[in-house]
Length: 547
Image (tube, rainbow, N blue to C red; front, side, top):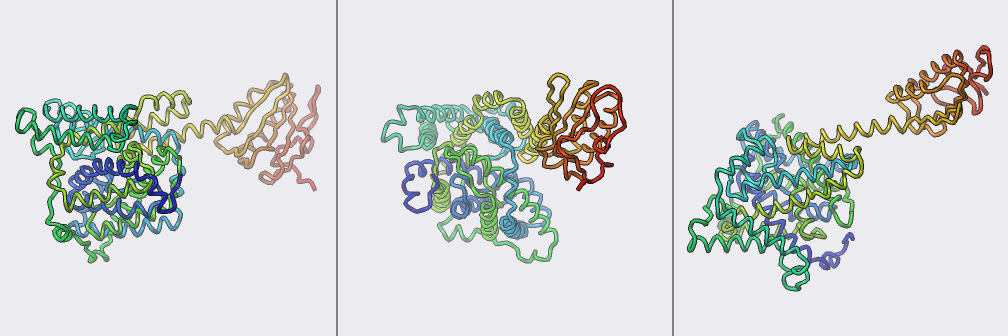
């Protein structure tokens, strides 16, 4: 299912509009939280979310990916604003970073996205799920010391994910706990078959009902149960604007006077590379989650993200990426096409221009409940069981990636997971590149595909298993490349074989490193005695070339 005409998108409005509402509810506090953590104006996060929803959605080739300000860039943004001296100067770097991403897309650098193993991507998704659960529990119980969207294990306040959980137990807010537990119960009920089959209830997304429950409970408790009333600091805090003119008047333009500042380009390059990598990782993850298994074009995604960052920088917004949390929420809410992400962008625009007073009634505990449930769906126990049954080569990179991301951050964790995955690839190559088959005193040593110096130790081990008086066929017919180190190891074995009455026959080794060995030619004759080596018995490197 890959819509191409407007009518194709209209056919899925019943799924995409509710999903867009859910993504909006998730994105609103995240846009504000990332801006706050980045040391930028709160409006900057909303601008990035707007550009991501209204523009990048249609420029991207992905049907389900959602773009916006990314928590993974907060440290870079905060340090860059300090380094360049002002936020307008930083915005110039954002615009240049966008241009660099467009160039990367034109140069087809998006192919990098195809080199992330599936086990590592699944580990990333499970890690994001666990992070959502662990990070949102404090918000769910009314402890909002950290900004919404914080994903790092080591926090800027010297606390960690786990120590923050302990602190939250000392600052419980009864009203927030009732709201979050009630919201989770409402959303779980909304996912049952009875509610799904109801033609009226099926039209209303469960998270929206959960938010309505939270607002209603808080308004009721203010008048009738003050002990359960949620304080203002635990509610959404959206800045107010006096209509469109007030909104436009607060936009910050970039400082183009930075064109001759070398540091501005250093910051731009850093932003372009990190944002591009995070976008490609998110795109791969969304493709894995997509029920229709659609594959989004990675080069087009880089160009779309570049366009988004150019516009965001010009309008005073934060740098953006394709973001996995909002994209995951889109998939879990039943989104099917780009319309869901576009609806989320429209709702962000309406919230900025028309609805700030009403949205400021939403308890953060409600939104935390939505993210906790999204996290659970990303890290379901059955995912761990399924990867475990696929064997160590799949489960180990999955688990290592999960733990590494949980204890560091997204990019470091992915790098560690990739290293673990490469270990298993190299180990598998050791076993698959060379095989030795035995039938009595006859041996078949077969070289498969590419045999490099990395396979020298396994080759020596296999040759050492050949008993005296054996007959060995070395077959290179399946090898596309044989390293010179492998040929020299075979040379040494041929020489030593004469003293052990071992007969060696070479097949299909022609043309490798200038070596000629005709099929069926023996390296030593069988029987007692050891005659001097013939031309076929001589080490490969010393053999005459035959016409």
